[in-house]
Length: 554
Ligand SMILES: Nc1ncnc2c1ncn2[C@@H]1O[C@H](COP(=O)(O)OP(=O)(O)OP(=O)(O)O)[C@@H](O)[C@H]1O
Image 1 (spheres, rainbow, N blue to C red):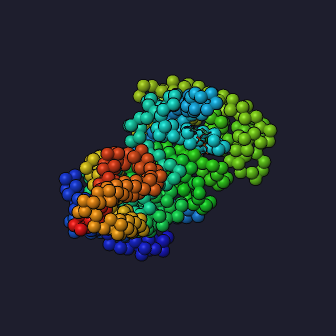
Image 2 (image 1 turned 90 degrees about the vertical axis):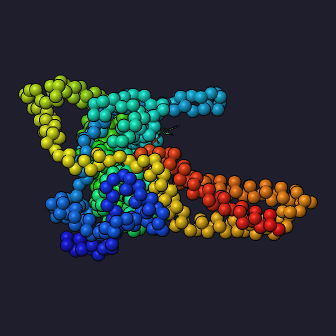
Image 3 (image 1 turned 90 degrees about the horizontal axis):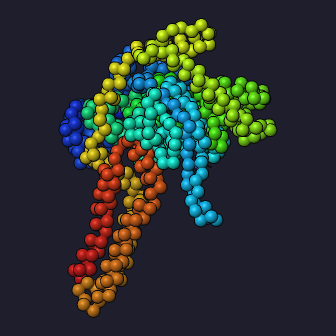
């Protein structure tokens, strides 16, 4: 245990300056100063000379939370037992009759046709539970997740309730509560882990809280996610599992009570998969609602999920506790062979192996859902207006369930939300600050991507030399009007296409990052586009100048 801690200290024992900014105006000035200095990272923006170290931050956290840093290994996974994210209000999601229609153009009939992808899905995702959405490829898992996250809203019908209140399919307030981590991590490869975290913290939490608090928060998140020793590593130098954890870490800054993840384990080896799911499980145990799609997990991983929602051909195939899935299929006459992975077995039944009747299972799942719902309605009716239990039950099963619900209610009432204050009082960065931060981030990435920069400079120098040689001395010569025209036209094309190519080549990567960051409410689109354009303009303006002048003077 001690050796583990001392390792961390040795690895991260480097001075990190902190910036204790307590009001927004001072913070703006501080950041502007940081941006105008030649500082090479977000984390090094000294303004008041105060300094501390990562080491100090960890120690401070230990003493503040009054716990030993019990770092233990379980199933080969690193667990930081005494570190928890601040509690958030539990959020339960219930959805009914979710349908999704897409319009497709039928070439043979030369008209648009509607196709239903999801056929009236019902279910719920509860706080404190880790739910897996499973199903064969093309079953509609990602579509369901996109709808639940509010990422897709057109063509969707049905009802989604959040803590009992109806939610529109593109609800802005719901997006404040949730974050959506898509399959592709879409991280910024040229930023280090600390820089990526610092930038995200400034954007998400604004400048209303001191820099020291932000720094502590970053260290705590990185520590909890096992990335504390990777602070100085560029994102592109992380392994697949570490990238997934960083993607989660970036969203955990705002500590959302709901997390949606699309295939978080795809492309990871079994150990990284286990680490990732173990992390999600821990986050769920702290009271979050965590929903992720997953492709046939191993038996070990499968057991880690609390709830399972299976989709087959756009229908619900099974929903309920993971450990009740095999008895459910067993009741329908499908018995899992010994030593067989339950997840594999379920998928085999879902694609009709063992002579399985998929329709029969879908009907049974629907029947089970209605049975549970009607039981819950009965249970609800025994609460008074304030949600308290009115009477006890004589029927064993129901009484037990009611007691469980009652205990959950009491636990919620007694739980302290003091820790929440630091985040609940925050406002995201203003538009101006968003622009400054994004501009600085772009500048940093452009500077570090020296190969691209070198290629651009080299291409321009080559074209300038060629044009200079071909059109040397044509400027003041009245007989060379056509040559002047060709030169100007060529220069114009050069400017347009080099500018365009930079955008075209980086479009796909940039779009993925932009979609993720914008959807998760890091910033507005205006500051983003302005920051990209302003960085491009100096390069474009400088292109024709040297050559243009040389021609005019000749
Ligand atoms: N916008 C769309 N237009 C046409 N078809 C669509 C659209 N979105 C989804 N689909 C279809 O809906 C079905 C479900 O897609 P979805 O991506 O949800 O599947 P999935 O279960 O996540 O599959 P996989 O595991 O392979 O990612 C697929 O057949 C897909 O082709």
